[in-house]
Length: 355
Image (cartoon, rainbow, N blue to C red; front, side, top):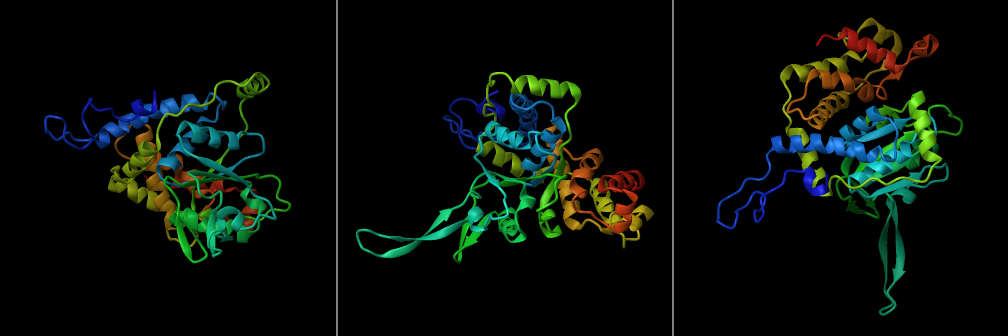
């Protein structure tokens, strides 16, 4: 499948949503056509990414779900699990520009957003400030080991993640869409790190846990990486296709009972809520806010169209409960003493909150 084949095609001589040579108005592709096209494109994207990546299908599905829902992703996993390679390979398969920032303790906010430099015009001698764009001006920003830089520098990403722009020197500079931040964290080595504040964690649509490969997958990884490099990923979708599909996600219908279930899940994670199960009160200091309910529904809509369905379902919400909630729950001391993790609390919520 090529970029042109990924989205609905048109007859020669016809313009999408406009008249043909005979003067007849020809409608553009419907939302139904786009959903079917995305389901086909998802298979092709997976095939292209698997040229470089072995396994990690669940991680790739969450990555695509976040991308079409216009959400940012936080990847948590030990080194060597191809988190960086997965994101850069996906960017190539989607014809998107990507930049990588290695977060270090000495990184400054201007190293991310850019800075004003003073220039002199050689012909007139006049001096003026010119804004030099930083690596944040891209489609996919890979923030590698984001917790290794101080909070002041971490906060430099907040405006771009929330508003799609950067303010410097009193001027606002807009980022070209699509714009997504995919950050990585090492869950083991915590010395010399700066945990992300809850306000910034809440800006990530998903926390995606990247696990070890299976024995067969690891065997294939070793075989591939110790042999000559194979073919790289080829583009499947173009930027215009991606923007059209991102605009489609909010239009995906969702039944009232699905909305209510997503809200019940989020509210049940709050220890002060009358709907919270006993284990939440015992192990959670602070639960998920309203942004979690929004993320559950947006993610469910995106997942539905990626799988060729025309409406979000309760099963979509349940599948996405862990990646949406796990980084939004603040565990208390009792949870640490009992060895209870956020995933354990979420599993209990899924068992106890009625659908």
